[in-house]
Length: 263
Image 1 (cartoon, rainbow, N blue to C red):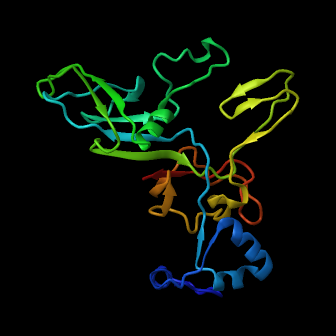
Image 2: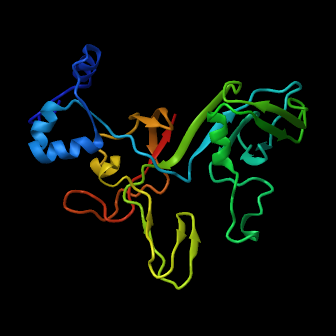
Image 3: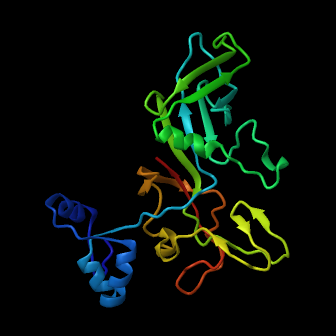
């Protein structure tokens, strides 16, 4: 192990956890501890820093296996509570994206659209244990002759459901303002005219990739909190750009790294 002024192993920290002697602080608390005691003494005194933050992420979704019908069906189109899910995977697998709108949503025909129900709401309904109506259609094959299939599912009755976010933990995401004379409606919320507000999505000084700007700790297989449960970093996220311009300390000044996470 590389020698630093303070060296701790996962094994040592796990033993402290088991013995009840571990020192755990939050990401907000460690900032003041480092400021008061310095990074070396902070590392000596603190064993674990919890870094859970909350933010919406538009790439999020769920891979779902909804179980075989009798007779079997190769689902080519799938809807959950009338929200389209992508069926171009295995026979009874689908992927529902958080931003997918309901089939009969008027969208921006009634401007600016209300978007009252979509994929994110379906995911929330599943997590709440509510019934979700599933409908699937197929073109029929010798192996899978069924062409239509419907049933009611819950998270407990689904054979498998995996939360998946191909782009998460964005390192230094954009902040949006509106310099025009009228309100602009964006995916980052309504922007008032003449820079009347600024919308952003970042955990700031708590952001994991701000605190590990060169990805020395966070990487493939890192265990994380995800949607209230256990998840893992499984790859670099979409739009990952580690070559972005950086400060002397390695912190990017434009959007840079992202994480592909599942759980």
